[in-house]
Image (cartoon, rainbow, N blue to C red; front, side, top):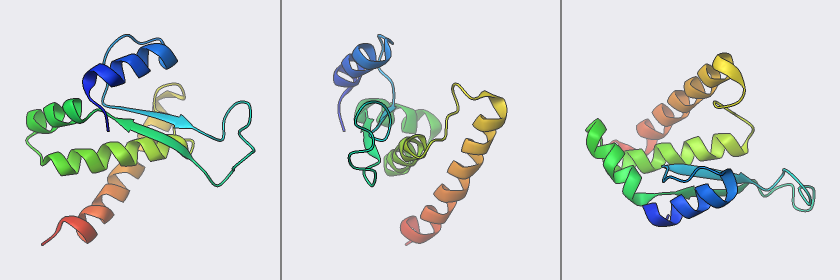
Length: 111
């Protein structure tokens, strides 16, 4: 969890996008040394500020937005890609997000 200033630096330095974003994932299985610790998926970085703004705009609880962003990041670590793999893959990822979030919502967020 970082603020917008920190995620902007990460986004700029690693993805060449000079702006804040809500979530960034870094897969440990990719690139040089990816085979060293195959059970380690990677890192997920979430901007708490962007998450709070997005939650307020959507009218949803902040905690739900955080869970969704973490889930989104983990799916990226598992190989899902909505940005570079076309519309079909984006739809597949979104469906998986909805499915898992609904399961988590039933289990964790219901009083």
